[in-house]
Length: 500
Image (cartoon, rainbow, N blue to C red; front, side, top):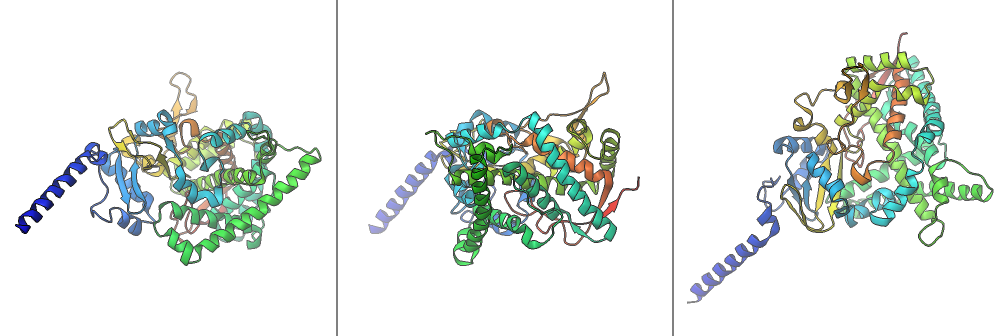
């Protein structure tokens, strides 16, 4: 009798679980969504462990496997991650339902040591206020009268370094040089600080840059590595993060204090910090030093890393694209002086296309993530629960044949160029930002996009006018896992002067 009761109880409980499962919206509505795991309990934890360093290539594999359809992964302790890799889904997330997809508490916590409450790490009103302030500096007059001068002046210092490397025959870490160059450049733009980093190779001179790199790397591990908390608490990584952030704060707060003294004395500059310091919060008060620090750090992350990595990967790609390199050189020789001005750089179409094609294959921000603010459905019927992560991979989308054709792995400038059939004039093709979201899209589209392209074109044109680069095999050039698309071991090159 007892056995029959037990069997009946088990049967009823099983029926209850089946009923409950049938009501689960993930089960009820997401039968069409591919699940990227084969082991029920650990799910995608094995992917994290075995594909940590080649996660971008894994994303490419998944995008091609599922043909751009939404797919879902899950890591125990982290949660579900819905991957969107079609223009329609990207537009829905970043434009149509912009308010429903947010940074969220988890991502904010992960990046807070570096970015604090800056524009890239907040939502809502805090984001709107900062975006409005930043937008005031990104206009053509500043591009022409202020930014262009800095780009040319600092690139000339890069050319001096390249010239010495060419004459000595010594190898040079181009990736490191680009990061020192863009940190110097954007520190000047963001807060008027002029680091002596390009020609000065003393490690101590780049103390700020090294601390910047380490803090970002640790923050990036927090986002997608289940063991990050253990590393920080028990393996000394937390102390490394604390020490790195202390170096960053020491420098930035010194600059803020000096700038307050300048403002009190009636001095004014055109950099971002000066504009931020003249802002008022909702209560009519000046922004605090902490708020100013966060704004500056966010601008540095955006302005330094993205351009440095864009130029590094572009030189890497051009080493195997002699036709494209020749097209750029011929254009620069025809249209640019040795010290180009704004209008000359604006006329460089092949060079512009090279920047975009480089970003397609090696985007400076390889992936991004949002959090669902409430339960909702995607246009393809996929149910997304409140708090679920929604991910898109710029790296995977840029290498998707269903978006770019069967020649997707080739570096071709023509992909971003259009010829007018009547006049024969060449122009740069404006791809949909939802097909090509490397500069984000919708209301959060990158404010500094045109400035980044201007700096990239200027530096590339001036470098290729005088030099060629041979990529050295050791160390191998491979991507790193970080917020931005770093080269894990740098990129050693031999520099050669162009024979005119």
